[in-house]
Length: 237
Image (cartoon, rainbow, N blue to C red; front, side):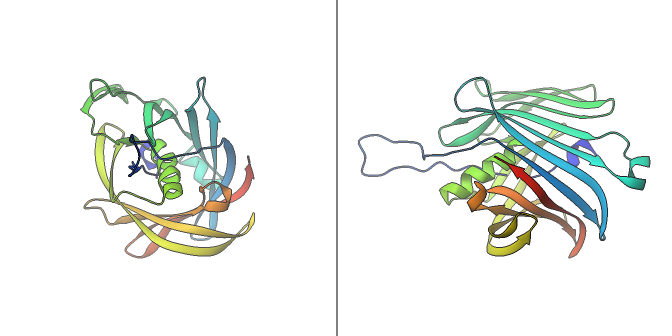
């Protein structure tokens, strides 16, 4: 379990026609805290927590995602993975300002400068200076982006995502809806898959519209086999 393994969500700009001026789509994100368990071949291997809180100014948010191994897996993964993103809603999009990932003594610290269109910082003590494309995300902010896009009903096909010291292109697909059983009860969900170009691993996520499009389930597969699965246990709004 590495800093880069924390994973995957998206953005969309809607233009209002027949108006005197262009307006950004109405988007809404509400703070929440969610607790998950992670399974590997039916064995509980980790716990995970996602907390999104309001920032200092309107439209600003802090998104924190932690994963901690359990049982025998703590022998190998003794330190939790903690990822934190600071972002704002701007023009109907999630726009990251800063990202920090840490596990034990290793860390990634990046700032997004949208005026210069550069992402700068360090990844495990190596300098980072990368050109940014409009709509680029980090490993946390992409999840909030997908929540916004699903609410707006328009999910882009591709995202550029910062993963450690690289910006990588990921393909996203809305696979439709499914009603699933969870510890929160039966929920209608939208299924979204993401896959890095040229990679055979697929991340499949279930988002619940009735809960503000919060992710309630996730699976990563390779060659059709489930490598791990996450399921929501509790949620506080």
